[in-house]
Image (cartoon, rainbow, N blue to C red; front, side, top):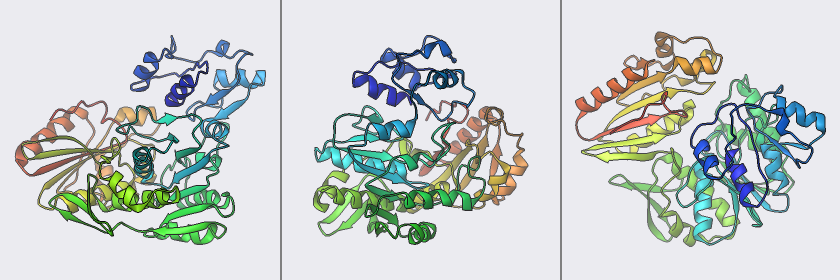
Length: 435
């Protein structure tokens, strides 16, 4: 939302906003642009008749006083995706959808298009080298959108992806998530069926042929589309570097892991459709360093390599660990995972994590009681969490100071040739890691 505000400000619009809690990086970015509200909170007096539109974030409740004031005055109200579509109706729209891999695929496409000097707008869920912002809106004829299946807003409960109406789409994978919104696996899958059903006849769909659920959903709902499968790009490792096997010869890349090379194939398919030759794609992708918090290397010294990753769902957790073990088979891997999302902190979903951390040499799960309180969830006990992962030597820690001490102790014991993986969609309760 704050990145959309900044993008609209750059276009010359007059922008104001409210929130009941504003943290960095949003706080600093808004302050630098002169858009930071004087006070946190909701102020219905801000909703005046001269407003052209209100854009409603997905965390604003149905009883939000500013929302009620806008409704009373008849001011047009858009959810985030509705507004993005409104300003991109005349553009060619590419949407990357699915349970995982969305940010990585979107980032790869953006990186290649920029290298090819193709003008485009975008919406992506992470910081990316070479791009100052995560939202760009201009008069470009093309927009690349990371599509989220989470509800659009309090008054528009349909998934965000329903509103983008893509000409080209990717379906990257299906793995149950967002239990607070989609209480059953079948209900979750049905959102992607509806998404494909809603795409215009003849639109292009590139789908992950290695995901059985994606194939099932595509068979059921994509008969009216130009559906093309993609697979993991052929590759091999030289030391710890992934090398693509291509008709143009070997192409070393900075990313690694089968899941990322599967994502790369999706990006290649989209870029082909947008007119980028395979030769040019491979030349551009060499310099792609990855998106922030997607197997992002944050430290390396004295035989220790530390990666930060956004992994939070069971499938993402397993894919990340498998990637590191395959690329660095001789390294001792210490995996530290934070339960942070509503789903991961919910006992009804915890059973989905069974054996998801088996690939690590040492596995630690952390959760914060503060996070449970913020999400209105009942207290969890470490023994209960331990039982659901089904790994006897797993450690479960619920205090951030003890977590820091335990990680430091393990690193001291491990010596050289160690890899530490910090996996979370949160911040480990605000820990400032020092390595």
